[in-house]
Length: 296
Ligand code: GLU
Image (cartoon, rainbow, N blue to C red; front, side, top):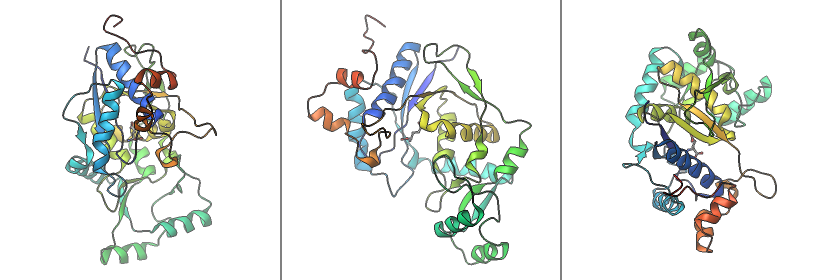
């Protein structure tokens, strides 16, 4: 039996809040309970939103919560070559195409074509050639307009004899055989796998890293459930193993919306400054008291 490997993978684009604490502590508790390893990974590929000065406070918050993780901490921004290699593999399979359309052009095509939306609310691009004509695409390519790389979803699905299922584990029995749940990556349409400013995207980087870091168990919120289906497809296309996954409940704000950095949810550091203890954080996150050496 190999040692279970868990990871907590925050983006340094704001302060951690109680929802992050729940996710981080669940990963930590499960690593402890299984005799596993915990990794922290910094998902900082977005130069427009991530701020290096937020990294140390984020790590300080995690240490304050009581987490211990292995070093070095992987920073995605330092591993672009790994993502480029995965992109090349998909290019070799003829599953990527450059898309030169601007956001307004995409939105206009979406309104005209009455496109559905992706799970994160973006227009669901239904296929190559659905925004710009071939002539316009060729013109923009010739003059060097920057492009994103989109996955040709229909071709990707056709390549697989059958869509493999997601492996779901039970946090009460993390080492028991995973149960299988069907994945529906098609809801993402022709999703962007490399952006104009960085040669990757969240979905591609996370799949590559989970494989490179030998992650066996992924613990993240139910808001990532649809993404897991897309990740399963990418793992399959790239020949990567599929970690077992558990999607935990989300903590909601008083108005019923999920906690989010972008909505200014109370940060862990401000709670700490106000005298809240890690024990209280566990309680507020709805977690049982921490395992101690005696109870472990
Ligand atoms: N970087 C993602 C976030 O901060 C984590 C997603 C994941 O665990 O795969 O929401």
